Amino acid sequence: MKQRYVINVQNVDNLDNVQIEISPFTVFTGDNNSGKSVILNIIYGVLRLLRQIIQNGDRDSDEYRRCKDFIRELKENKEVCIDHNVGKIFCDFFNVSLLKNREYFFKEVFNVSRENNYKRFENTKIFLNNYRLFPKVYVVVDDMCDEVLIEGDYVKIPEEFFNDEDYVLELLCEKIIDNGFSDTNEYKQVFMPSGRSTFLCYANLFQNLKYQNLSMKDFITNIENLDFTNDGIYGSIHKFLEEDILKGSFTKDSYKCHLNNIEIPISMASDSMREIAPFILFLKSKERFSTFFIEEIETYMDLKLQRSVVSALMRLINTGASIFMSTNSNVILDQICNFLLLNNLNRNKIEGFGYILNDVLNADNINIYEFTYDKNKVLVKKLPIDYRGFKVNFNEDILEDISRENTQLQFEMFEK
Image (cartoon, rainbow, N blue to C red; front, side, top):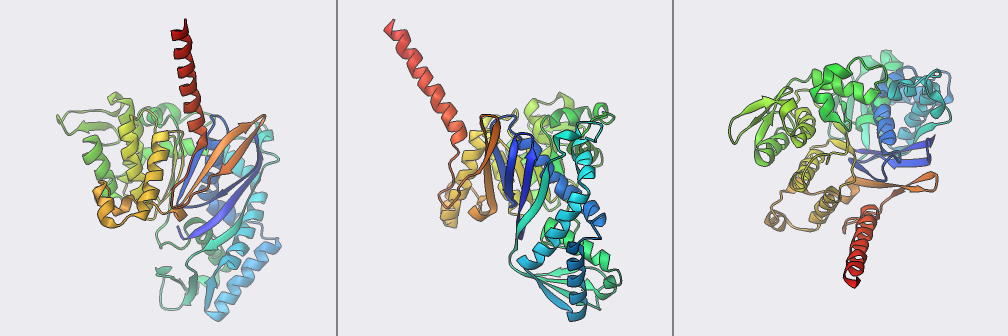
């Protein structure tokens, strides 16, 4: 992910003004029912519906005219640098287009309408700002190619594409916001909701639900349409999980244990196997999923498996994928912190701890947000992260309180 920007969400439920800086690894932790899933779904909706919102953008706005001026300048000069100023022009156009399509957005993402719970979102505002792209990208008009080519920091767009300026506008806007000109392949998001093991095992029961939201509907559709490969871009990651950690392999319908060669229906596998199965299945997909949204990946996993899964997440990020994730697991948060600390060691010392270079996490690639209740409002705080890692107070306060209570109970017991 070359690009960075902030998604602002104002006035939704108990959340006043949430600012989430997009990064390769974005983690939400904190109080239950505090809005983590709402924000995850909104960010998923922004990326998932990006193309539709741009295509139905506000063509009467000044923001649209500024984008068109940029397209014409590019067409005339043959080469333009995409920097934060250009990014702002296209983000501003997306913002006014999202405002125009606000009812469509919330109807799609949360399955609400003016007749169905729309009041919850009628004052909600979503917009992007503080766009950055590094390194800078140069867009070139090329009369020799017949498709978009990305070669290092240069993006070549066929000259004939400029016969339709709106198409070039949509193309640039989508790449500026979605994949930061990472490559020419079409990027796709995947959402793994909480309770995914139930959706995986009984997809037919949920397909006709009246009130499916976008993430649930997409998850079921993606699972149903999966086609697998063992040698895809994430091949080493799913093999690490299946062969080294779980000692078994998955299909959409079954789990096969490598220790005894017994294959059983996925619905009869253990809770932990069913819960991690969708993640592995998406890693094995022939279709490349570039952005993963994961709710509470730790569900039903023992501590050892939680720790191993963090390695898979790090390796996924280091392939160029992005992850948005909610978790309340101390094991997962502490292990993420350990992988940040690995960045201070040389290769020999990293391997001495039993890790590989792809387990290392750069502090610039992660943002962690803590959601906590304050009376009737939710505060969302971005945690400070540096080469020493980070500290989450949310779970530690609870553990310390339990420990103090235990000490007091023992004191009272022995005093009697």
